[in-house]
Image (cartoon, helix red, strand yellow):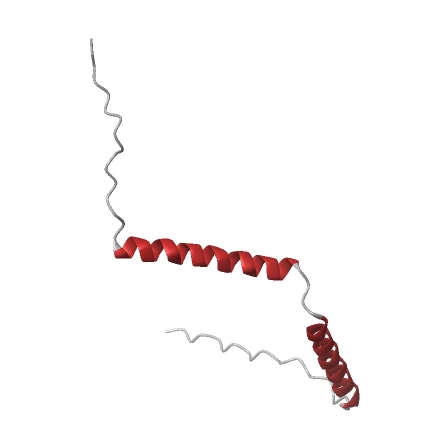
Length: 86
């Protein structure tokens, strides 16, 4: 039984333009996701934290300056009209 084995490389068609675009798009998407994950894990720069602290201080000062008005009254539900019998 002498079976001949075909050990040559299998024929793989050349990738089309659409397949190439899809491949590189997937690579770019994966890199973008990694950058986003790293941005969440690692803290931001000190300058950004100072800006956030200043904005919170300004908001707190504005809230303290505003005089308190009358407490809002709860809205009363309108009474349901009874259905007319026919």
